[in-house]
Length: 103
Image (cartoon, rainbow, N blue to C red; front, side, top):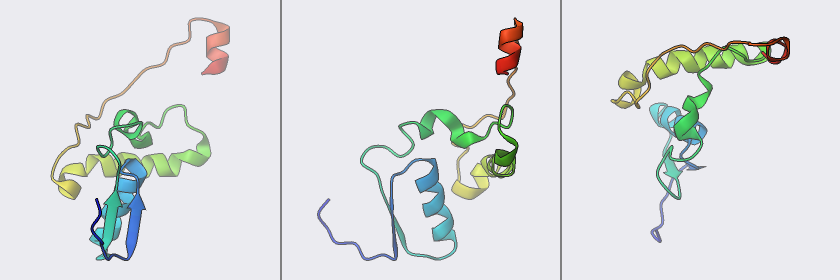
């Protein structure tokens, strides 16, 4: 791409963080351009669902994880699609005392 684009904010990277930053800046009326070398969300952000899980997190991470969980549930209203996000649970089992210590 060789054209000049005038904007107030350029976000480099179309993963979870970059995409979210661009979305919410634009919703505030800030001119923003999102630059991504490949497909948005195609790398790590496309497989980790933005840290929505709450189980197994440090206590200091829970407020942000709780907010992420709330926002992912609002994807259809925010961006017009569900982003293939399916809210489900998971279960971790310890089969030994060593596994339990890790959990």
